Amino acid sequence: MSEYVAEHVQDGPGVRTPNGVLRGALKDGVASFLGIPYAQAPVGALRFRAPEPAEPWEGTREATAFGATAPKRPYAPPLDALLPDPEVAGDDCLNLNVWTPWPAAGPGDGGPGDGGRAVMVWIHGGSLIHGSSAVPVYDGTAFARDGVVLVSVNYRLGVEGFGVFPDAPANLGLRDQIAALTWVRENIAAFGGDPDRVTVFGESAGAISIAALLASPLAKGLFRRAVIQSGAPSARSIDVARRTTEAIAARLKVPATAEAFAGVDPERLLAAQTAVTGKGNPVLSGHTFHIAVDGDVLPDHPGDLLADGASADVELLMGTNTDEYRLWFVPGGHTERVGSLAQRFLLRKGRISPRVAKVYREGRPQEKPGEVLGVLAADKLLRIPQNMLADYRLAGRTAATYLYEFGWPSPVLGLRACHALELGFVFDTLDLPETRALTGPDAPQALATAMHAAWVAFAKTGDPGWRPWDPARPVMTFGPGVPSLVEAPREAERRAWEI
Image (cartoon, rainbow, N blue to C red; front, side, top):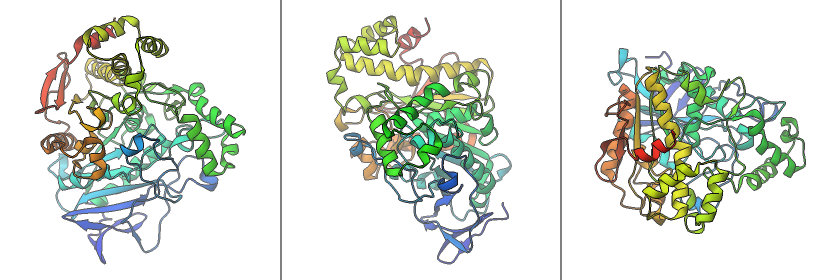
């Protein structure tokens, strides 16, 4: 165990790290340490710059409250009622949280060499403009209860994290995530974790970030396993990724440079960003932020790098929800408003072949045009790229790949198995009101127990409990009903994209 472990400080659990002593909170055998800085505050001369390591502190630092969240605005109605997004004021937004079984010292969970417990690092979603590690749904207590050290990370969002400028590094949010993972490698043994058994996992924009980290030479060796929930390899060229930054600059009437943006009042900058991206949508597009192929963090598109064997030694678990699109389509009424003509226009705009669309229409004769459009768009963005990546990895004889599908239908607003619904099941936080906003009050605890246990098993052993990907295309389905392994679900629709 690390020389930095300190089992107790006055009035709480304590850990001595290279930067100083932390005092956390203890409840039911789980210690939590919140708001730990992994990098310096990205303000002043460090704004729009790569993260710099956090500085040491004197005495004991209280770690019992979440740290500052990255500058952002709440979700717009009606999503604000479904997706909690707390805001914590302050400049030190490059912080993370740790939940760990206590005492931290002692044997791990029987992993290789028993050098400590398995570690999971959570990267939140939110379209690269929302979200934080302070979302209650992401509470790490259940993972620590089950013998995993859980870390959750804040990173820069929006134009601060993913703006593209000629006078600043690109992908600052990704660089923040890499800095956090570097902190984990250097510090997590003090919390009882094994730095050689780190699993990085995330959802939506967090999952897209993980696909980029899998492909990035700067993240190589920082984690052993990865989980991609409702995301896929995605990036744009520098020129395309720059367009949102330029649109914000035009609204502000300033040059599209980091120097000019650094002189804009933060609230005014957020207002302009919200105005430009407010109508953006993961399915219907519009102005949004992208990870950029910058020649440094990402030398090429992550899908191409992964197909060519990047992270071949990393075990991978990935999957989607059956009705991803309904989070974006149903609350806003798109399923009702999109008729056959609008569907054809949007399919052409999204470059989806009429031949592919025909297969989906014929297989879903009872569904409305807006619903068919939503399934097509979600499959193009998520399910099909994940299947392709699994096939590439199988052909390349990589470490094991596992696929899942989450299908339990929420009764809330007819959202069914929509985007983000699986989060309360993965974290085993169904009892929280913030989770119930999306699941309703009667979500099945047995399903959460099974799904959470699969994630824990994957982190500890690399095996979530079902057959890895093979030519029969096995997918573990979590609901409705009892979890079961299904081979090649909706194969006719998937094959339509191959021709």
